[in-house]
Every structure is written in structure tokens, then in C-alpha cells.
Image (cartoon, rainbow, N blue to C red; front, side):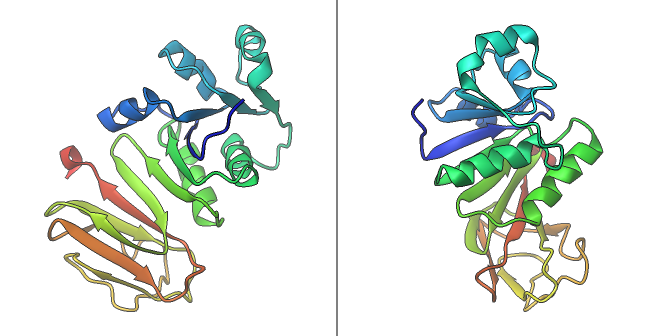
Length: 212
């Protein structure tokens, strides 16, 4: 099994439907499935390079078909997405594009976002959902369009975050809560977000054009 530096992790939420997600799934990127997402992937004609999880959602038929591509981890203290992200870290990938993190139950989606917000990763991480995209960053310029929905999240209450190119600018903003920097908008073709602490992760959401 050849591990590529830029990989897709497919979580077991709603199967991705956006054109961008479909293009990625049809590419030659390494596809890592979280347990039951391999069932949906196979049903849609996509075949995982690796499957990680406790295998409680995988059918016996698929367990046999993918027997050489399964890493079974029974640890109930972490979910399958956490196991997949740990594998990506241990195998020193450069970037992860996460699909299927949304849907599959509101608690499932929220749990996935908190997992990512409360951990740090040494690879680039973006989450493409059926309504937009999250990027886990510290200091970054983003492409945008006027009135595009933008929300910013950070769990570190000491960090100071600033922006330019948004309708409601942040200037050394401290996150006393998670929702204080949501429901913003881009004013033009780009905006940037930066943090005074280089070790703090910020989760930046941009809505799809059709959802603005």
C-alpha cells in the first residue's frame, strides 16, 4: 500500500454530494474510510485504500473484500474519525481533506467539529461539507466572494484573533464563547484571519455560493 501525502478521510456522516467533493473522490487521492463510510463509498463506486475503526458497521462481505485494507482498533474511548486522524499524523501526511463529517445526526456532526477544534495537527486540514468548507488554520488568506457567509471558531480564550476583508472586522478579538464570531460576511474576493499565538488553531467556515 503506497501512502500519498495528500489524503481524503471519509467519515460516516451524510455522503458528500457537492461537485467539488465528487471531483476529489474521482481523483487518485488516497482514500481512508472511517469504518461504516466504506459501505457508502463502495455503494457509490468508490473503493477505499484503507479502512480504520472498530469495524462494528462493516458488513461481513466487505470485511472479506477489504481484508488486506483494514486496521481494526477496538478502543471505545475514541471515535473512528479520531483514529483516522491519528493514523494520518503517525504516517506524516501533508494534508487531509475530510468529507462526510456533516450529517449522520446532529450530535455526530458536532462531535466531529469539537474533535478537530480541541486537537492540534501537524498537517493541513480542511473539511468539505454539503453546505460549505471549514479550514483549520492559524494565519491565512482565503478566497471569497461578496456576501459569502463566514464564521470563525476558536476554543482558546487567551488568543487574540484579527481579520481584514469581513463585514464585521475582528481586532484582537478574544473568544469568550464559541459563537461570538459567527454569521459574518466577506466583503470582496478575499479576506484574511490571523492569530497572535502561532500555536493556536482557528476553524474558519465559508459557505457555498448556493447557501449565501
